[in-house]
Length: 114
Image 1 (cartoon, one colour):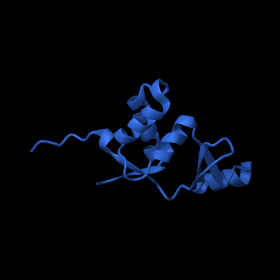
Image 2 (cartoon, one colour; image 1 turned 180 degrees about the vertical axis):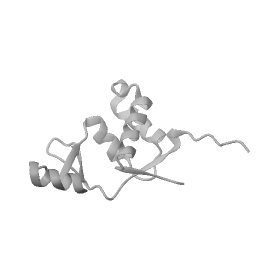
Image 3 (cartoon, helix red, strand yellow; image 1 turned 90 degrees about the vertical axis):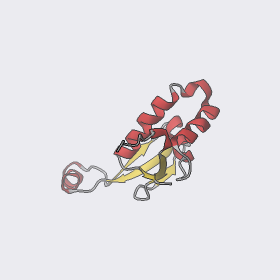
Protein backbone atom coordinates (compact mmCIF):
# COMPACT_ATOMS: atom_id res chain seq x y z
CA UNK A 1 0.00 0.00 0.00
CA UNK A 2 1.39 3.42 -0.98
CA UNK A 3 1.53 6.23 1.52
CA UNK A 4 -0.59 9.13 0.42
CA UNK A 5 1.44 12.31 0.10
CA UNK A 6 0.14 15.17 2.18
CA UNK A 7 0.45 18.67 0.80
CA UNK A 8 1.23 21.09 3.62
CA UNK A 9 -0.59 23.86 1.72
CA UNK A 10 -3.84 21.87 2.03
CA UNK A 11 -3.75 22.05 5.85
CA UNK A 12 -6.51 24.11 7.40
CA UNK A 13 -5.37 26.02 10.49
CA UNK A 14 -7.57 27.28 13.30
CA UNK A 15 -6.77 29.27 16.42
CA UNK A 16 -6.18 27.33 19.62
CA UNK A 17 -8.71 28.72 22.11
CA UNK A 18 -6.25 28.15 24.98
CA UNK A 19 -4.32 31.23 23.84
CA UNK A 20 -6.40 34.42 23.84
CA UNK A 21 -5.34 37.18 21.50
CA UNK A 22 -6.09 40.84 20.95
CA UNK A 23 -4.94 43.80 18.88
CA UNK A 24 -2.53 46.21 20.49
CA UNK A 25 -2.34 49.99 19.95
CA UNK A 26 -0.15 49.52 16.86
CA UNK A 27 -2.79 47.26 15.31
CA UNK A 28 -0.69 44.10 15.70
CA UNK A 29 -1.98 40.85 17.16
CA UNK A 30 -0.74 39.87 20.62
CA UNK A 31 -1.12 36.27 21.75
CA UNK A 32 -1.23 35.66 25.51
CA UNK A 33 0.61 32.63 26.90
CA UNK A 34 0.41 31.70 30.58
CA UNK A 35 3.76 30.77 32.09
CA UNK A 36 2.86 27.58 33.95
CA UNK A 37 4.92 24.85 35.51
CA UNK A 38 7.36 24.51 38.36
CA UNK A 39 10.29 26.37 36.77
CA UNK A 40 8.05 29.26 35.67
CA UNK A 41 6.57 29.48 39.16
CA UNK A 42 10.04 29.65 40.69
CA UNK A 43 11.10 32.32 38.19
CA UNK A 44 7.95 34.32 39.01
CA UNK A 45 8.71 34.19 42.74
CA UNK A 46 12.47 34.75 42.63
CA UNK A 47 12.95 36.92 39.56
CA UNK A 48 9.57 38.65 39.29
CA UNK A 49 8.89 37.07 35.89
CA UNK A 50 5.35 37.66 34.56
CA UNK A 51 2.57 35.10 34.90
CA UNK A 52 1.55 35.83 31.29
CA UNK A 53 3.79 36.54 28.31
CA UNK A 54 2.50 38.42 25.28
CA UNK A 55 3.82 37.45 21.88
CA UNK A 56 3.44 40.32 19.40
CA UNK A 57 3.13 39.43 15.73
CA UNK A 58 4.48 41.81 13.09
CA UNK A 59 2.34 43.32 10.31
CA UNK A 60 2.69 40.24 8.09
CA UNK A 61 2.02 37.78 10.92
CA UNK A 62 -0.94 39.79 12.21
CA UNK A 63 -2.53 39.87 8.76
CA UNK A 64 -2.04 36.11 8.34
CA UNK A 65 -3.43 35.48 11.85
CA UNK A 66 -6.59 37.37 10.95
CA UNK A 67 -7.08 35.16 7.87
CA UNK A 68 -7.11 31.98 9.97
CA UNK A 69 -10.75 30.97 10.29
CA UNK A 70 -10.77 27.16 10.41
CA UNK A 71 -12.12 27.11 6.84
CA UNK A 72 -9.29 28.41 4.63
CA UNK A 73 -6.29 26.28 3.74
CA UNK A 74 -2.74 27.60 3.96
CA UNK A 75 -2.77 27.84 0.16
CA UNK A 76 -5.92 30.00 0.21
CA UNK A 77 -4.47 32.20 2.93
CA UNK A 78 -1.35 32.58 0.78
CA UNK A 79 -3.41 33.89 -2.13
CA UNK A 80 -5.01 36.51 0.14
CA UNK A 81 -1.58 37.51 1.51
CA UNK A 82 -0.19 37.84 -2.03
CA UNK A 83 -3.14 40.01 -3.03
CA UNK A 84 -2.67 42.26 0.02
CA UNK A 85 1.15 42.54 0.19
CA UNK A 86 2.12 41.92 -3.43
CA UNK A 87 5.84 41.35 -3.98
CA UNK A 88 6.58 42.28 -0.33
CA UNK A 89 5.21 38.84 0.60
CA UNK A 90 7.84 36.94 -1.40
CA UNK A 91 9.09 34.30 -0.94
CA UNK A 92 5.46 33.75 0.02
CA UNK A 93 4.99 30.03 0.64
CA UNK A 94 8.41 29.58 2.24
CA UNK A 95 7.57 32.35 4.70
CA UNK A 96 4.11 30.95 5.33
CA UNK A 97 5.47 27.44 5.90
CA UNK A 98 7.93 28.71 8.53
CA UNK A 99 5.31 30.93 10.15
CA UNK A 100 2.72 28.14 10.39
CA UNK A 101 5.39 25.72 11.62
CA UNK A 102 6.22 28.15 14.44
CA UNK A 103 2.56 28.75 15.30
CA UNK A 104 1.87 25.01 15.39
CA UNK A 105 5.07 24.23 17.31
CA UNK A 106 3.99 26.71 20.00
CA UNK A 107 0.45 25.28 19.94
CA UNK A 108 -1.09 28.63 18.95
CA UNK A 109 -2.92 26.89 16.09
CA UNK A 110 -4.35 23.46 15.40
CA UNK A 111 -5.03 21.82 12.06
CA UNK A 112 -8.58 20.73 11.30
CA UNK A 113 -9.66 17.88 9.04
CA UNK A 114 -12.18 18.56 6.35
